[in-house]
Length: 211
Image: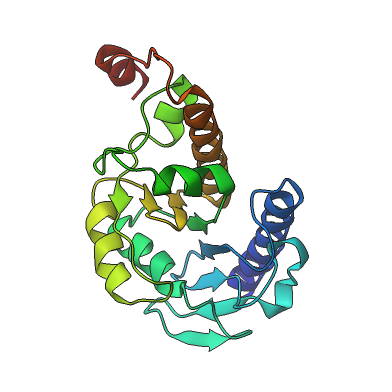
């Protein structure tokens, strides 16, 4: 029991640290976005509803059982099911980050993007940390129908982009999920900067070598 408590304490502090880092750099704002991380016993710690990622308190994080039942902590975010969907489909994942980051949301609103893979492979680090980015059709925030749509897309990718909403990214660790989300946002920014210009993305052979 003490080992789990120690693990949970460290993970709570890490969630708070990552949340503040994302907030301070403008990758999230107000009370938008949420972070979760999974303990070795299957329980999940998650940022609560109406909480700014810039001012989280470790003891107020929501805690869920391995079966997805809210156990204690503050009232969970209404988007908790997004995280649970990712954990169900990506069983190796230890954390999930969901943001409303500006450039990623902007790309999700564009017409004529490829719903199977929204962003082209512009850089090596995007390919290594994100890989492919399918688009999930638009549903209102908190709509449980979004769960099925996310689960379907997450079968083949650890990162998905919610139309007119933002990215949901899973990683083996919280830092993996954070770095992949940041790489996604920077690639979305590059994509918008290059929009209308001829580009030279990585070739299929180059992508295969990186993977």
